[in-house]
Length: 267
Ligand code: ZZB
Image 1 (tube, rainbow, N blue to C red):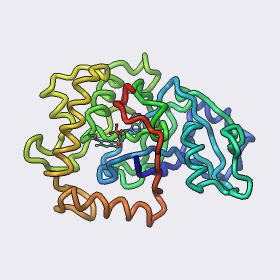
Image 2: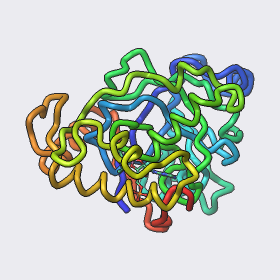
Image 3: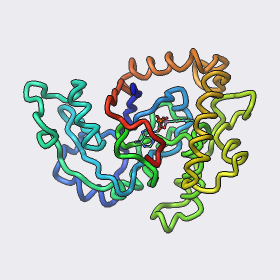
Image 4: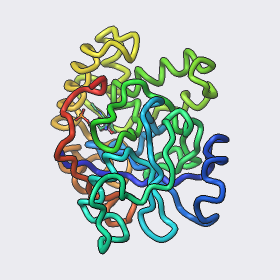
């Protein structure tokens, strides 16, 4: 699988992470959460960044004063793709990766990150998603509730039980902007499908898998962009142009996951 890996710069750490990073990285270092996406054209609608609360994430040193937060298996993949500073000392095993520390996703929840292209320019929060798979992509997922049924279902659940999830309710209630017009599901494909297929929770995995397929097909073959520089253009041609412009601006890079499990989020 070839993904677009997006660089979401940390603006403010969660309290737990503030303690964990103290003294371990330079004060002026840049740290990025790196979600892997197949839908770069939906980046305008990002409202949060999901991590699996029980999955372990590492803070890896990418180059001088630059770090990324991903799973170890993703960092290992990145090493093979030449993204680490020091190819002269190519890691012989995962243990030789330039790891600063590891922590479960739950420790990162609440961190404020900048999401490239998102209409929420003030930043978005790192939130927990139980159905993130550690065996796919980078283990970090960017949330686009307008066009991803999984994301919409998860955000509804988070907003219903904020105390249980240890988050502030408003973090899960950022405005959902229409990004893509479709003939069958209107301009909010994911909310429409979640309603039509009577999906009540992120645990309705079969219905969510069906909704995801319908959303992918409808969006790609029949969708038209409603926002951004390619407003009015079909998604099928806009997709590659938006991906390329993210690469050109340095806000994203190509990320291959040859061993990635092609499974639903519940994996
Ligand atoms: C933003 C986005 C916007 C996505 C959308 C989808 C949609 P797939 O389809 O299962 O092969 N994803 C990436 N990594 C993981 C992971 N480790 N665990 C769970 N989910 C993950 O995987 C590709 C999509 O699944 C990615 O694209 C990402 O969510 C998520 F409007 O990024 B996407 C109809 C889908 N719409």
